[in-house]
Length: 189
Image (cartoon, rainbow, N blue to C red; front, side):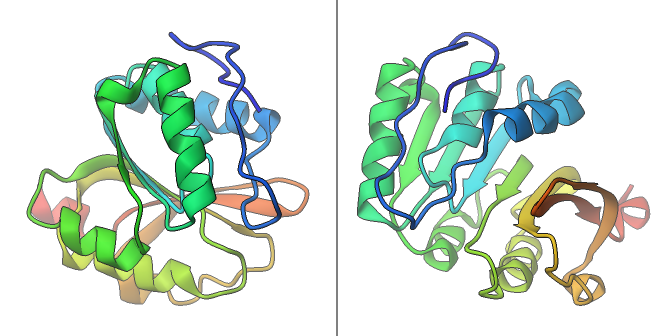
């Protein structure tokens, strides 16, 4: 795993040992950032279930103003710290080593995020809970883009109840990225 583009281009990133994290492959990461490249520079980025931090670090390398990484696993959080230091991006990154729901509570009341990346453990039902809390706590604004990485077969029938609308879906071999925005964004303008 490496940084694809930007100030930390080509630098290798450490990954947490074991099978508790699934690092996003370089090819999928490159595809994702090609799709959102116009939104990254100057953005406030939230990386939930951050694993080794590869997605948030890529955003920082490409000019995001700030990235907050949320990761509960001790070994994965250590990788994020090391990767931020190695890429010299630690001054613009913040790590919250805690449960995602606790971290969202801690972040409430602050400036909303422009980009949110959610990569929860597959088949555990985190998607609905996290999306609902993002909206309830005001952690996103009407122009925010929320990207969820999920197993291909994950149902998002609940989406309407969270206040988000599906803007786009990009499928890969075994998983997909869903691009979401607030459902009532036109009413807020």
